Structures are given as C-alpha cells and as structure tokens.
Image (cartoon, rainbow, N blue to C red; front, side, top):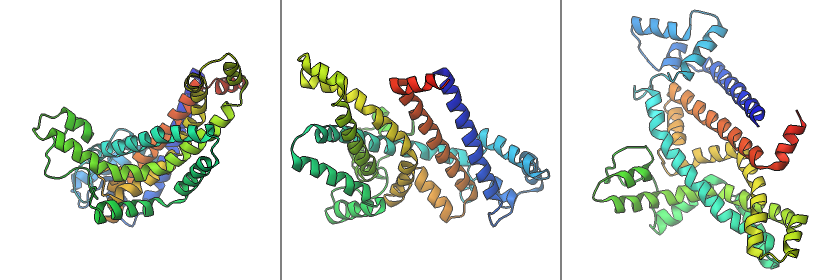
Length: 343
C-alpha cells in the first residue's frame, strides 16, 4: 500500500504542476501588463516594481518565470486583490470554510438518503417502487442545477417565503469567527442569541444544500441499487442465508459494506462535476464561498483572484479524488489484489 500511496502522491504532484503550468501560460493572454496580473498592484512604485521583477523573474527566460511563479504560489504568495487591495491568501482563507460547509452538508444528504433509497430499490419486489426510484434517478440526473436552484428559490423562498433566498446568515447576528465554519462558530460562541442564530444558519443552508445534493443523491441511489443487486447474488450471501442469519444482520454486516465500495469510487470520480455545480449553486444563492468569490473576480477582472480561485479549486479536486481513490484501494480487497499483482 505504501508503494501505491507513493505513486498517488507522484500523480498529485505531476498533475498539480501541469495545472499550474497551464494557468501560468494563460496569464500571458490577459489583456494587462504581466506584472499587474501576477501581483495585483495597479500602480507599483519603483521599489515595488523591482520586487515584483525579482520575485517572478520577469527579466529572465520563460522557464525561469514559470519556476518563480510556481515557487511564489506554493509558498502562499497569491498577490494582492485588484479591487480590495487585500492579500488574496487572506480572502481565500475566509471563503474556503463556507464552501466546505456547504459541500459537507450536501454530501451528507446525498449519502444518508441515497444509500437507504438504493438499498430499498434493490431489495423490494414491488415493481411500482422500482420504477419510481428509476424515474427519480433519471429525472434528478437530467435536471440542470441552475434551473433547480432558481426554481427552489422561487417556490420556497419567494412565493411561499418559507426559507431564506441568499446569504449564509441574517446580518443582524454577529458571530465571532473562530474556525471559519459558521455552524461550528455559533456553537462555540457565547452570544445570547446562539439558538436562534443556529436555526437561522440552518434555514439559510437548506436550499443551496438540497440543490447541490441532488446530483450526487441520484448517483449514490443508482450505484447503491446496482451494487446491492450484485452483492445479494454472491455465494457468501447465500451461505449466510443458509445458516439462518437474520436478514437485517446479513444486510448490515455483509451486503451493505461491500455495496458501498463502488459508491465510494463513484464519489471520487464525480468530484469535478460536484465542484462545478457548487460554483453555480453559490452564485445562485449568494453563498459566500470560493465559487461565488471566483465568479465575482471574473466579473470584476480581478486577475489575482481568478488565479487563486482556479488554483485552489483545481488542487482540491485533484487531492480529494486521489484521497478517495487511495481509501477505496485500502478497504477493497479486490483492488489490493490487483495492486499487488501488478508489481
């Protein structure tokens, strides 16, 4: 396994460097001076310009500039925001927790609902239930996320006025920032309105989380159903049934753990789609995350924000995909067998 982990880490490094190289050469296509695109300083003094030239090796060859750019970005120097004139690294650190919070809740909804739904669809003999599940998965997979988000916003936010339509929490609540994760910060705070603030934050989270959860929910349901159908036909399940084990025990201890392995792998494969959908959802509901921050930077032509947003989202997708793939190989005996056989 350690050899496999080393290969995955090499893949992560190679993919990340390739992605940074594409981003670096795209900077040359920006309709502004390269020093401005790299640093975000619109009118640098002579001293600032000398520092920029030295940091990014602008007086050297393209390869030297690329390695200097790679070094600066990996060291955490993301430049200054063109519009706010604040450090981009600080802005990125302030918006990342909101994106993680939304993604975690959406993923939790998808797994908690999708796994039982897929299991029921696989085990039931009722044709109507099977067709309903199939129709749900096909419909959920086909619905455009922007249409779903706008529809939910219109129905439950505007017409019925049941749920908030934008933001992360009512601006009347002043929650001290401790971890950056709003729900956690509310729990850790000592404000007298803690309970009402927590309820308000949950209400703000429902619409964007449900919108983002629909695609992974349909995929988890469908893959769980297929995996359960396959697992229930295996000889060890039939042997457990022949020994007289209770059906619930067979499902929970033998069938479901093996059926979840393909679900885990599919979640790793859809990281890119999930992240792109998350950006759209954040824009629709004005969620203060990386996606909304990146799109605002594109509209405002904030070149350093654009680079930092693309860089952070790409590295997160790559790292999470490789992490899920490693976990899948660690818990799946078949994958380990194929891995060792390939040595």
